[in-house]
Length: 442
Image (cartoon, rainbow, N blue to C red; front, side):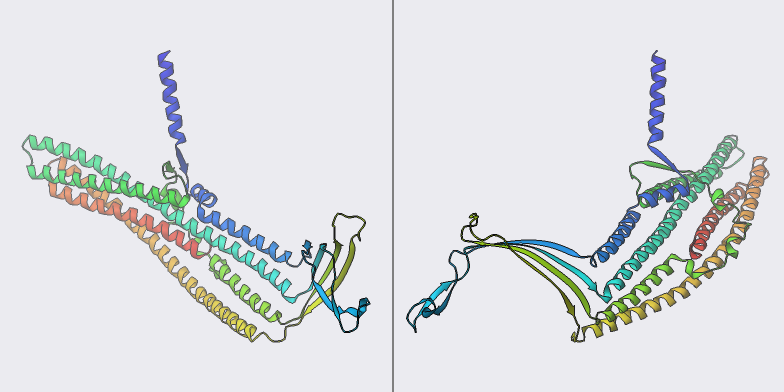
């Protein structure tokens, strides 16, 4: 019974440990970041705000209806001086007459409607263009986030590959050290040979610790970019070879045609240019007359005693009309607003031209770097295979007593250098591939 309980506890511990860790491929990490990062959540709010702005602009063209209730109580009714003879008094004398009643209650409904305003539809068009601008900005933010996640993910993979190579080297070196110590005990080698191997082992262990810390930092950066809980563990599941795919032999990516319009940044600048043009149009149309209609219906109650039904009741009043606003002279404000808007348009067009040149250069540079990285990896792979062959032969000679420890030491150094160069080359190739895809707007 106790054994079954213990087994159940072990299974539960294993389950909760697995739950505390999340595994992510590169695409899964990107999808998680796109759904959870504060950057993309802010972008979604910007899109919602742009939609609300369209509705707000559209609403300004709809009729508005409002009601008012006004109550006035005169403590002292205002009077008017009039000739006394109007009321039978002697000529040449004057008296005071009060007009009105002490209580006045008025309820009214006011209707206002836009009949014509040239800037209304242009403003609505501008709001829709702004929505498009926000959408393209969100695409750019998504592209940038993909690039950031990929770079961080690759740093972890390169660290893991370095760690695996170091562990293998440590195992080999520990075995050689153990064998050399036995040979030293037999008196067939010098203490200096043992000391050299121990120093190499110590340096490798220090390097392994540094790589582990770098991997830990890489995980922290990745979780930060993904907006993943920093106190929870994650596991990266992709391998470098899988991400490289057929990059070393496939030329599809480098043969793709470059088109600057595929870049999300281009769409953002282009949308800004369209908005500047609309802004000029709005300013120009402010000089066109606008027409508004209005209507008011009210009911007035005037009594000395507001609750005395024997006194006069509600008095209706209705009025309808239209108001034509004709701009005549605005102090040249519109002139200089238009001048500034044109300057902004020219600046945006210069920005667009500059981006086209910069994007073309980015593509050429990324393509060159990618091709060079492929050639470098191929060359370094051959160098690594040769270094491994030399190291293996040197070990055999040393164990058979026909080789010097210095040769082993030199072969180790060359092997470690070849391993580092190869792994670095793989990372450079993956980064170059990502940069080339980004320059193509993929």
